[in-house]
Structures are given as structure tokens and as C-alpha cells.
Image 1 (cartoon, rainbow, N blue to C red):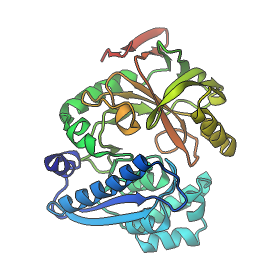
Image 2: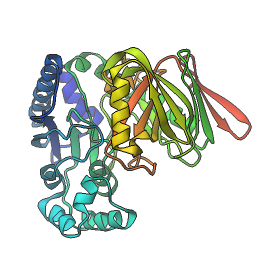
Image 3: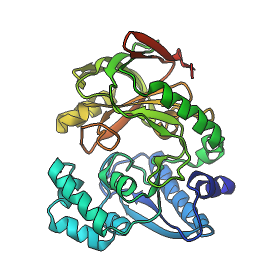
Image 4: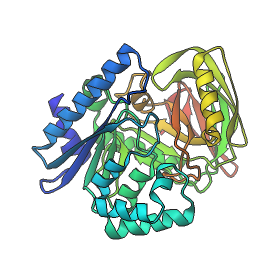
Length: 371
């Protein structure tokens, strides 16, 4: 396991001696409710983050940070994390410009974002790499986007990480995963639309026209590289308003549902959620509270042959031959919806076709990769 952690620095991030790496994690908020198992997992995640930071000292300069959980995937990290990763001067200027609080609330408009970007370009002093071991994902945040796109930081996002991954999915041959993922990216790029079905009742189609395809390969050595570790997927943002169909959810991000949940999709949004399962009510409440969370935000296809666990979305979405579809935010990878919510759902044994004009191209057939 120690060797696997070392490879995060040497293989995945390609860290060099003079470089500066920030490792961070989040601590349970006082008002968070959790089972005993969840509390134990969250405690262990902190220990893993500490181990990663300690191991990294042999390879580079390390800053280790802890912050109170923001209690949701896709929410911006708090001010002290921004200050550690952009510098106090840049954060002060962002606050003086009136853009900082709006960015944290995901309510900044295009003009305000342009102002913020100019400040970051001019004043921010950022680390070379980020290892984001927070329980809640920071992948789909302006924080991550500004660090990678404007400052060239390499960003390893590791939400929900568990110790078992060090002896399982993290033992993948990253160069093989990279090759497979890039082939899949090529198969998806430049196409018009996607049609997906599963034996369990999911049937959905949407446009992907002119949407960039991202390859999460696990190799994050180029400036501005961003991805999950463990890695292994190609993903994109469907065109807003284009998704139509039905999703049959059998898994929540961290558990199998006791009963399936049916999500009806119209005009790109979840318009009805039904099922005799508490998770159906949770999802309904989230969308009622934050209507933009209903947006069909992401399509991803897994490419990691060592991924196997279905009950942790960080790993399950990487399982070779699976599809995952997310609701909520996609503003950081080619979409137009900005909302403090992003939740992925895994689908097994999918058949997926991409359509290019009159041509239909098979990508997956009953979960078998055709790439």
C-alpha cells in the first residue's frame, strides 16, 4: 500500500523535488448526521490523507490542510482553502471585487467570472499540484477550474476514497488505462448524440454535439491536468435541454437501493422521481430546494479493469463497461449549468450507441466495450 501511495506522486502526478503539493481533506461538520460505519470511514479518510501528506515529503514540498465539510459534492471549499491555494492577496482582491461570495454560492454571472479570472491570473500564487482527499468532491467547482485552467496546477480529485482501494482499483496499470480511455475519447468525439439502454429499464438519449470529451486517465503530468484517482473514464456534458427518457436507479453513490427509483427525464431535466425508497424522497427534496440540480449534467463511461466495487461512486464509475449519468453542475467541464450539487449514478450492462449523422456506432453492448 505504501508503494501505491508513492505512485500517486511518482506516476500519477509526476512530482519533482522543487514542486509544492497541497493535500487536503474535510472533517465532519458538527451538524452532519452519519451512521457509525460512515463515521469510521470518514475518520479513516483523514488518516489516509495524513499518510499521503507524510509520504509526499520524500518527493516534494507539502502543505496539509483540513477544513469543515461543506456537506455536498460540487460545493466550493471555504475561504481558508482558497487562501492556501491562491494566496491571501488574490482572495482579498476577489472579495473586494464582490465576486468571491458569488463564486462560493455558484451565482456569479459571466461578467463577474471574467473579473475573477483576471484577478487570479494577475495575483494568484498557486501550488504545482493538489491532492483533494476531501469526502465531498471538489471536482466540479470554480476552485478546481481556476487552479487547473488558469494556473496550470495538476489536480488529483479523490472524494470518498477508502483504504481498500489501495489494494484494488489503485493497482491498475495506469498506462493501459490511459490507452483504453484515449481510444474511447476518440470514439465519442465529434459525434451528434448518444442513446443508452440497460436490461433494467433505463432508456435515455441526448445531444453531445460540439461538447468536448474529457479523458480521465490517471496520468496527470501535464500542466493543468485534472482527474480522479483512482481514474478510468471518458466523460462529457450533454447539451442542456436535450435529454429525454427514463433512468432506473439501482444504486445511490454509496449503497444499493432497497428498491429501484425511477427518474423521468424531459427537456434535459429530471421532472419526476418515484419509488418506495427513502432515497427517492431525498433526491426530490434536493431538486425542490435547488431546481438546477435536476439538470442531466454528465455522461461517463468506465475504463478501469481493476475497478469492481459498486457501492462507492469514486470506484464504481470507473468499472470497465459501465455508464454513469450525473445530475446537477457541469459548468467546469463544458456545460452551462452552475449549481452547488453534482451526483452520479452508476448503470450496469448498458448498451450505448453514438450517432453521427446517419451512422450508428456501438460503444458498449450489454456492458462489453467495443473500443
